Image 1 (cartoon, rainbow, N blue to C red):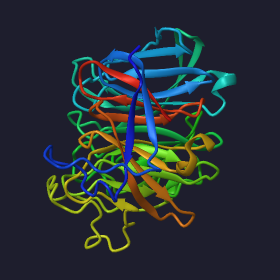
Image 2 (tube, rainbow, N blue to C red):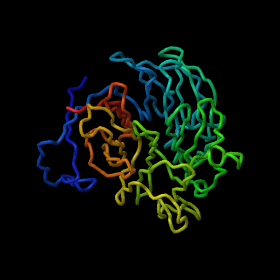
Image 3 (tube, helix red, strand yellow):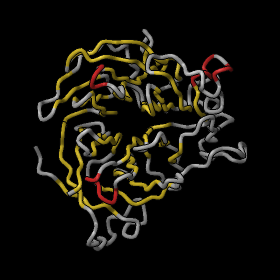
Length: 376
């Protein structure tokens, strides 16, 4: 195992730009700047997309369709599961993972993935429920959602998170089709909500419209890459991968329209939150502005081990190649605090583990890995 590496948090007063030219002077250290130790957990992977824990058993996947388990310091083991044919291309493949809130007792977990037709062409994005029967075997329980649009593999979204009880929230992408986000008949560009058994809650805002609209919790999104539940609350936040003019962090609101509508065609020069077309569209709690950083997975840091950063929202960056930290107030005001800068390249997912550490996956295409970050 490699020697742990330590990185300082780049505070806004020291690093105002999202990227610093190589010729820029090195900022002077501040006495109370925290340092972070990063150690590899698993290396040699190819685009690991998400990770979760079934009890103390870590599960992580690779986009190509591989699922792994890891217990403690033991080596990772391949998990056998009967996947459908996958459409593995661009943002398509085996993507989001989340464990059931009672996974330690029932062994349930859920996957979001892009499925292929028998011809190999893209079919749709689906959410499946599984049960672990051992550390190396899982059986399918049920298909919860099918028919999420896929296009050619661009903008698949596919992030899964529980909010409370058995209610599963699903962040989807618009499949690069301009009419999907504002169309309640499409499951693309939405936050969807289902029970963990696949039934649709009658309290969903558009349930009475029937069809796909029954699943919709809110709409008007481009490509949701992160969902995070704020500890001690039922407040859910989404992180959206934007165009070259704005990435966003949004409060997840029932029935909300978030204003993405790139029609006619697929005009990515339009605003991520188009309040000219939709005056009541919900403003982003945070927008990156230009240049964007390609926000991805998200989680909250929680526990005394994080000191002053207990309760901070952490967001992985692909293009930005770091972890962006935000303060979130009781009134849902989001303030950018700074970045944790590492030399691991593109970061796809960040999740706090049951041990209180922050885990992240890289997405560089070769020699990717799962890493553990702690204060100290």
